[in-house]
Image (cartoon, rainbow, N blue to C red; front, side):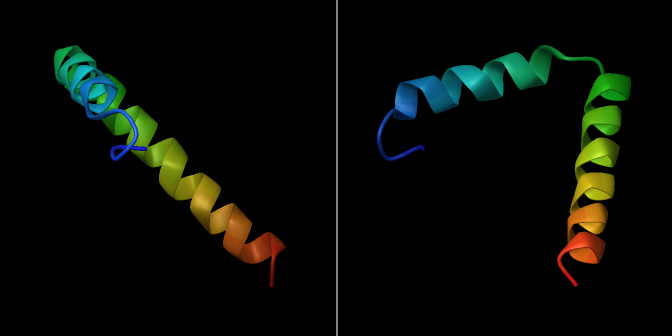
Length: 43
C-alpha cells in the first residue's frame, strides 16, 4: 500500500528493476494466467 509506506514501495521497485527481463516476463505471464483462471472460476 503506497500511501502507508512509500519508502517500501520505492524499495520494491528498485528490487524489481534489478531482476532479469526473463524473470519479469515470467512473473507477468503467471499473473495473466492467474487472472484468466479467476475469471473462468468465478463465472
